[in-house]
Image (cartoon, rainbow, N blue to C red; front, side, top):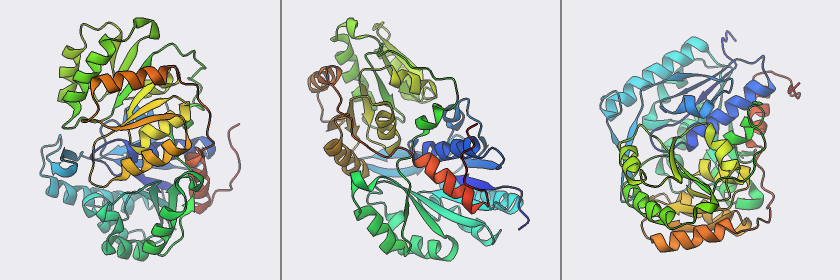
Length: 391
C-alpha cells in the first residue's frame, strides 16, 4: 500500500469534549508507545490544542460545527466560520476525503459513528481502499439514532472491520457490547475507559500534589441552564468557609457565558475562572471535591484522579449521561450524587458539596487503560510490533 500515514484519527465535534478527548488520549498513547508511527488527528473542535497540551500529537483543524441544545435536543447552528451547518458538512466531507486520499492511512479510527457527523465520512470511504477502518464507541451510547440506524449498520458493513468499545464490562455489564454486536454484526473489542488525563502522567510535567484546592467545577460547554447554575454556584461558594481552599471553575472562556461568569464571581476571591486545558489535570488531582457534568470525558477524569464528585445532568434526550452516571454511582463512592442541573437547589448543592469534602473514598477497580489498549491494537493493525516503548 502506498501510504504516507500510519494512523488517522477522526473526532466527531459540535458539542462537548468527550469525542475529541478520547481521540486525543488514544493519539497521545500511540505517539508515546510507538514513536516511529506517524499519527494525525482531524477534527473541528476549537479547543483541541488545549486538550493536547504539551503532548506530542499533531492535528488538522477543520471549520467547527456549533450546536444549540434546547429542552435536551441538539440542533446545528452556523459555526465560527459563519457557514450554514448543512453546507459546512458538505465542505468538510470534501476536506476529509482529500486528506484520506492524500495520506492513504494504513488505519483510520472514527469516533462515535461510521458515517461521521452529517455523513461527512462517506465520501472518504471511496478512496484508499486498503485502509483498515475502525469504529470507536463510548461505554454507554444512549439512544442516539445515528448510531443505531440501519444506515449506520450498512455503512459499517461496507467499509469497517472492527469496533473498539471504550468501557469496562465489570461496571457496565455486557448489554451494550451485545447490542453493538447485534447491530453491526461484529463483536466489539473491549479496551477499557479512555482517559486523556491518564496519558498526561507520562509527559513528565505533572507532579504529585497535596489536596490544597476545595475543588474544581467543569463546565466544558454552555447550555440553556448554565447561567442558572453559575448563580447557584456563586451562592454556594459565598457560603462555604475559605478554609476549605480555593475553587476553580473550568469553562471555555471564548463563550459568551464566560463574560457573565466573570461578573458573578468578581467579588469572591476564593473562586477563579480557568480555560479548559491541561492545567485541569493538576487542579483536579489537587482537589478535595469536584462538580462535573455527566459526560464520558468528565467521568473518566474524576475516576482517573480519584476525586469525590457531584454529577450534574443536562437532561439530554439520548439518556446516555443518566444511564452512565447511574452505573458508575452504583460501583464507586467517587460519584457522590447524580442530579438534574436545573432541579438541584443551591442549598442542596451546598449540602452535597460539603458532604463530598468530608468523604473518604473506597476505591473501585475500573479499567482506565483504554487509551493504551486501543493504541496497541491500532498499532498492530498498522503493522507495528506490540512492544513497550516507554524507554
